[in-house]
Image (cartoon, rainbow, N blue to C red):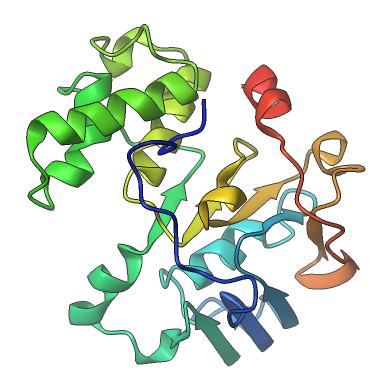
Length: 241
């Protein structure tokens, strides 16, 4: 079941729109450290597409994602995300900027005192969406990720994989323009107008899928594959989780 098939309006993002993320000769080092985490990175991510960011542990994948959502700032170079220069962000504008994204990290930070459906629906309720409608959307998304029978369960009753699925549903319920994942977990989202960037070291997942790939080694891009057309990965990803 695709989320939002009946209840969500189709995204207005066009295939011909500007790139959703652009790295222009970006380098990054932590303040006070001589170690270069990322070096002279130039990369472009288009709307509606699914990308893999690959490389061994310590290659810089997590720092790459943090630069995209503004948790880190580049030491040099420029980053444009959703047509916004991340250097222009401040405390006041950061919240609005991140509301356009969905972020799923390895550590699933669910609210332990809320059940599964409330964890997912909360983002909409905070935006003053009627609770009944928010729960309806949450239930639809949870069915999509295979947790339709777990609506009233609490995080402590779930496996790690199930928690990740809840995080996916929570990340996409607001129809983000950009979805970032710190581990493999997704898909079908390109069809919803959402760009997806997945950081993973799982080469089996990436191989022969026709998606864009940027491969990191010691903080530099040493290999990249052009897009060959988006493909549905939902079934395989759900089996993996």
